[in-house]
Image 1: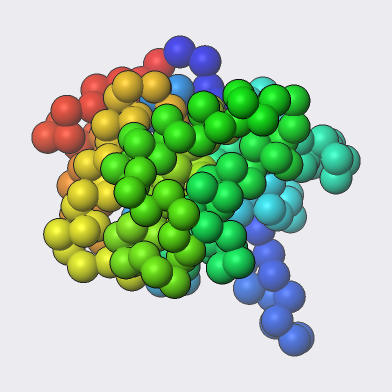
Image 2: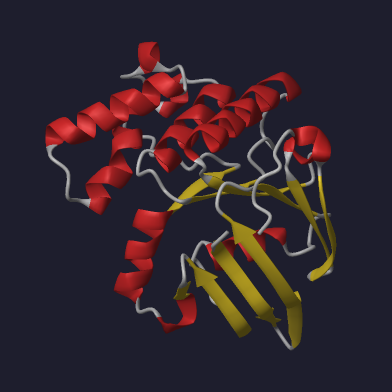
Length: 239
């Protein structure tokens, strides 16, 4: 199976005054289409840094990151923006919704950035995705009128409306109660299975780890081990 993300001998350093923080150290990882993978580890282990590199938000200090076959360090700002818009979806623990826009407008926003669709095509796509996350009655409500679980579902709809190949979710259940968190993970798992979208999570939430088909463990910026969760029902992704 063709890889959708490849990291080869990746290091990421951050200067902190006179000290250099080594966020990632010699990481080699490959993710395949349709995987539902959790990157697990304690705070400071490098989980978010890894997602930032895959999401083209940052670049490695050394080594290579390829997303959909493209070497990210060789792409200019315009090509990186296009890659993020066309291939990647992002789900953040803080939701990052636009307060001035209603639910519909928040979900539509990535399509406006992406361009290339008529207003009618955008409306059809947006309404389908809002229905998928069961928020049609809240269509014209703004983020401050929604519960935490509803806002996270809006964030999922926004991430998926462009039909990305890869979705990156940084601690997606961190601000949710356990029941709402489980509903959110079930929804993402359903979309993963229906559309073969690759999901990569960063988390230390045992519930999320339990549902993953593959668990990658980081500690102090290093890949310490990885395993397959046979109980998740997801046997895809292995080459």
